[in-house]
Length: 261
Image 1 (spheres, rainbow, N blue to C red):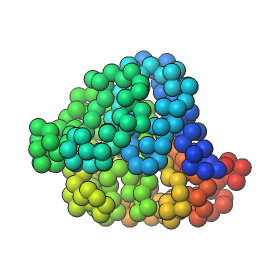
Image 2 (cartoon, rainbow, N blue to C red):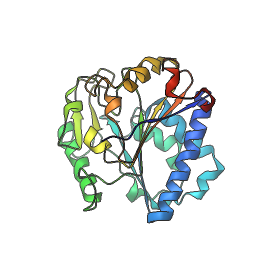
Image 3 (cartoon, rainbow, N blue to C red):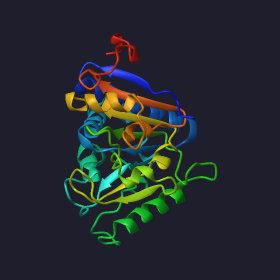
Image 4 (cartoon, rainbow, N blue to C red):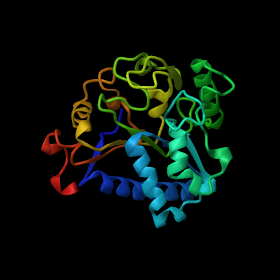
């Protein structure tokens, strides 16, 4: 049974990014204190990148032991490894190049110029194998129990590269899939599936801006994950929607107290 989503609505997207950064830093430090390591799944897009930039700008980032964090991705554009459209390239520019991460703990999704070439299905299977190797015997769905899994919510309610009515949303067994014919460019991608996402302890969904208001309202009305993949993304212990006022504008007022902004 999925936990009831919690909503936090911030005044604007800048404040949302700063608050989410502070929240994530605290969660990483707590996980490292409790277990020695932290495991986080990053997301791309404007909100994911704004969050990483806010971490980079925060003095509190030095509280994190960056050598003891495993970083994964929820999805990736299947393009060459140095393509500026890749989530990994953007994450490196925004944060990772400026903190002392352990390269062996940064788990990039394969690129189209990797060992699998243009075979996106083989590349997806390769990432699934890497996840399975990192999972412990107690972990669910052959993936590690991520401390936090970040997802941006698209204007069509997609999360990762799971788009409404696309085959990847229907996947119940595999943890990673190749995506072809995505409705936004580039059409070929790699994505975690909903079973992999739901293995995370906490799932945080990020949405800011007027163009996300319809998607947020639809997903939180719970029409089903085939129509709105975002409503199928939840954690084992917590599901947190981090919004700005513009993205929350079409939600029923009873869903969140106005003072929360």
